Structure formats: structure tokens, C-alpha cells
Length: 400
Image 1 (cartoon, rainbow, N blue to C red):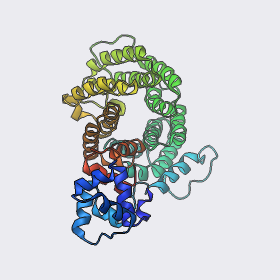
Image 2: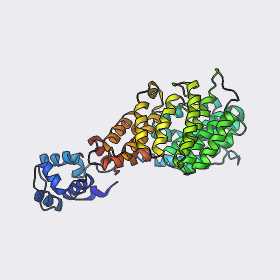
Image 3: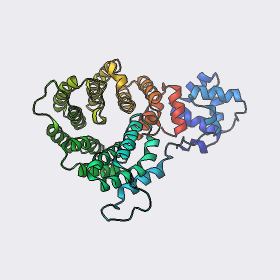
Image 4: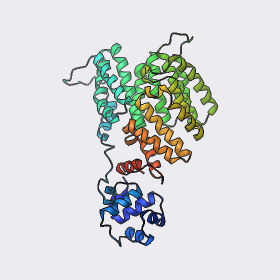
């Protein structure tokens, strides 16, 4: 939250005028007032006692009049699940099973029931309903671990998937240390099952990239991808091709952040060959992999490589593809945040604002709850030509 809500109304006017990068003269001209009038208002010499005047000022500043009056100045409840994240930390820190601690009177759920619950958690995550997923995970983690202890064979897959969705959510919420713990558990539980190892490795790549370990991420992703790749790729397409292709995309993103454009091109082309076989409209192993996912990755890697024009050109191609609407909502919204960065890097705040408005419409939590989305919103809201809706949203959330 910014401190403007603690200021007198005149100082709030000065604060927001500064945020909009307007001089007193320009601000006065837009209001149809004199510079002296603006100066007196901001210094508190002249009071603002007319609602119509407050509305005119708010319109020029592109904020809600309530912000000037100090109402609704508290940020929206974007951290209301902090206690639930703490519960996830507790759930991941428990060692009840290896220490043979009693589980109390709560019955051990069958592995099939846990599998259905984790599938629901994944679907909720892919619809970008992050607060709901945060609330689901503590109990799901405990039950998945107990189900696996009771039936190691049937319970292993659901437990790995529980750790995977937990890691994905924690990366999204910028909690890399907890995400690392979840993905480490997933890799350990996967053990000697190549498919489960490859599935867990997708989140391993996310966690390593979030932690800045780009070279390690690229190496690990390639090792996992080539381990799961079939020796001969024929006409019978297995779901594991989606895992292999997704791991190649993770490696490409790591290489892009490291600035290795040659490696990026080769990895994306390799992934594209697999995507052609898989096709769009599938979600094998919760990857959403297909030709459109590769096209999205091409634009995202261009952003990481600093090629804003190339990223924006690819962006226009991506959103026109039929497969765009088949990608999970979370995937699309996360990519739109990257596209907004490309617009900002290309000195186009209006374009960035337009993209963020689209992201907010399809997945509000991606902008309101995800730190990367809030950062992009703050950058756009500071621009003089930012869309009014985003400026008001930023003010409500207390970002920028």
C-alpha cells in the first residue's frame, strides 16, 4: 500500500499528479484552472468542497474520487490467504509418516479418492483460481501422503501430482523455497518411474528458473526430456511426447534467460517437431503442450532475449491461432503478463495496458494475486497514457 491514503486531500492530489507525471501547469490546463489554483489546492490553502470539482480532478488523474477522499484506500484483499500459505508450509514440513506418528481419528482416504481431489486441484489451478487452490492444498497434502503410506503403488501417482500442483502454485506466488521443497518431494517420490520423474521435472524446471539457476535448469530439463523420449517417434503418439516437448520448452526458457539465443532456436525447433505430432487441444500430464504452446514459448523467449519487436510480432500470431483458446486459462494469462512486458520494453504502455486488461478479464488472480502480474500492473499504471481501469485497479490494490 502507498502512503497517499494518510495524506490530506490536497496532498493526495499532488501525489497522484506526480504519479501521472503531469506538471502543475499541464494539470491546471486540463482542469480549466490556473496554475496558482492548483498550487493552493495542493498546499491546503484552498479547500475542495465541491463534489463536481473532485470528480473533475479524479477524471484528469484517472482515479476513483474515493481515492482522493481517502475512502477505499486500503488495498484489495490480495494476501488474504497468507495463513493458508503458512498451512502449506506446515504440511510440507511434517514428517508424520516416516516418524510413525499417530494420524489421529481421521480415516486414511483411498488412493482413488485422492486422485480425484488432486485432479480437481489441478483444474482449479489451471483456471487461475489461486486462492481456492491455496485453501485446498494443506489437507490434500496430508491425505495424499497418508494414502501413499497405506498403498505405495496406487498412492504414488496421486502424491506426485499433489506435490506438482503445490510446486506450480508456490512458484506462481513467488515462494521458491517452499516450491523447492515440494518439487524435491515429487522427484524423490517418483523414484524409478520415468514418466513420473519427467512429470515432476516440469515443475523442477519452473523452480530452478524461479531461483535463477538457468544453466542447471537447462541441463536438468534436457536430461529428463531425453530420458522420456521414445527411441523412434512414429505415428502412434504417446502422452509422454507432451512431457518431452514441455521439458524442451522449459530448457529453452532457461537458455533465453541466460542469453543463449542459438540454444533457444534449436530447442524450440525440436519441441515444434514433437508438437506437430501431438496437435493442439490436449493436456497430457497437465502440460497443455502442442503447436500453440510452442508458439507462446517462442514469444516468451523473445521477451527474455530482449527482442521486444520480435516478441510482439509473434504475440499477434499467437492470439490469432485456433489453439490459443484451448490453452488453460492460467497458461494464457501468465503469457499475457510476458506480452505486457514486451510492450513496456518497446515503449508502448498503451499496448501493455491493453494486454493486461485482457489478462485481468480472463484470469483476475493473475494480475491481482501473482507478484509478477502486480509488478507489470504497477509499471503500466505509472505511465501517463495508462488505461483508466488499470490505474484505478492499481490504486485499489495499492501497487505502483
